[in-house]
Amino acid sequence: KNEVEQSPQNLTAQEGEFITINCSYSVGISALHWLQQHPGGGIVSLFMLSSGKKKHGRLIATINIQEKHSSLHITASHPRDSAVYICAVDNNDMRFGAGTRLTVKP
Amino acid sequence: GAVVSQHPSRVICKSGTSVKIECRSLDFQATTMFWYRQFPKKSLMLMATSNEGSKATYEQGVEKDKFLINHASLTLSTLTVTSAHPEDSSFYICSARAHGNTEAFFGQGTRLTVV
Figure (cartoon, helix red, strand yellow):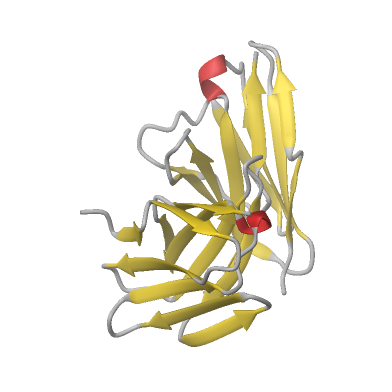
């Protein structure tokens, strides 16, 4: 079993839909990161969380430390949100989920 | 927030040549830098960890003579892919951490294509 599990692996949505991507982990962590990787490969760091909830524009990230679970939400999704979203947990070593490929159709 | 700049974002090189990728922390001192590689349709995998002024610690299966890592200053680490081969084509990304800080910041990544 991987230490970081993401679901779903692939997700297709219509423009405007509310998106949720989940991340579960099995190790103790100091922080959790959500990363966005565009088709060209470039990585953008979206959030770093150690507790609670963070919001940036249409993106919301939550983490439940007790349950070892985090979610990334995208409200009013748009085709430009199409990318791979990667969850990474930090416990001195970084461990990455396999990523969720999101496609938002117009 | 803290910024890590990775350069170049894309590079194409010929087989047998060497390529250097730079990772700079722009507004903090990065005592530890991490280098990752992403194989097609796979997650990011740690290649090596470097502490400023020390030799890098490589993960099992990563050739240290192939992937030279230098972390000579608190703001710069470099990864040099030596005698590159097409199988070295991949996406490489760095992240940096300040001393005593649990936060890690990511570079934008470098897409290497060896032809």
